[in-house]
Length: 153
Length: 118
Image (cartoon, rainbow over all chains, first blue to last red; front, side, top):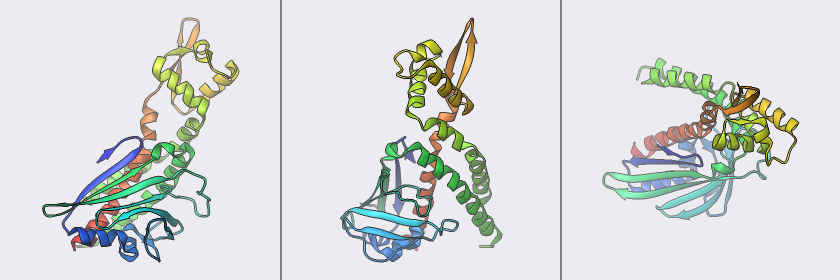
């Protein structure tokens, strides 16, 4: 996990072909399933996608991105406001971060790299608010974990 | 594993408490400049801190007090005058905003893995 002050970078080796990963990233239903958001329409460059967060504890929030680039089975990127925590708040005047997914063939599957950059432009007040709201998120996560632990697998 | 995660989450929960005053203290360009000066050249007396600042000594004192309340600086008496020293620990906390978003990505990518591998 490489994190600097202004960006987050993640790499994952997924045991699935590139086409499969691409579909999970760019089909709105599949994307919504793992990203926990309810979306309709299609991802395409320049498209503004608005949906509902389905993540437990965050269902009151709106998910909103503007698609940046799409290079089939290679690159998918969008801009958004990270940790959008206040429903009904107008974020349009605030700086965005850029999220870039890149796919690469590797032996055994697909290497997925996710880079979210531009955090240096996010106002400190926004960061503080994200902190406070995330505290609620953590509480919810604890409940999820408890439920998980309580269920024999 | 799950127990460890629960512990980590409980710890993170505790760490998040009280983060807001820190960010409030940091959310001002003049205070950030004072911190930067203390970081580069500290400890500094109030006289030195006012050098080149475009605000009054009174205003500098006020900003230092806000920073001190957030635990970012502390005044240390040296002879007849106080010198202001940077306290680096809370600044490390400010970084945890990224750690938090980083954790959210880890979780999301874990779910993506389940989806494409099964």
